[in-house]
Length: 84
Image (cartoon, rainbow, N blue to C red):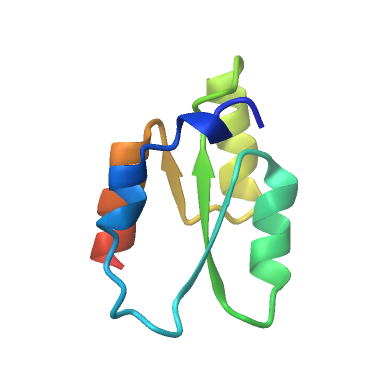
């Protein structure tokens, strides 16, 4: 994934570590959300639209595939994980 190297370290370092037992499946394709929803680990499906060119149609597909949250940048991702 081309955006994977752009994940700010501070965003991941500040994520709360006291939420043991909660799992997040972060991806950028509908297949990722299908995998999250089928998991026995009860993943929260979070999609990142940073690298996509057709964001409007992809967002619709992601929601149909079970995405619980869709974010456009890593700051939004951090806020969602802190909230959950």
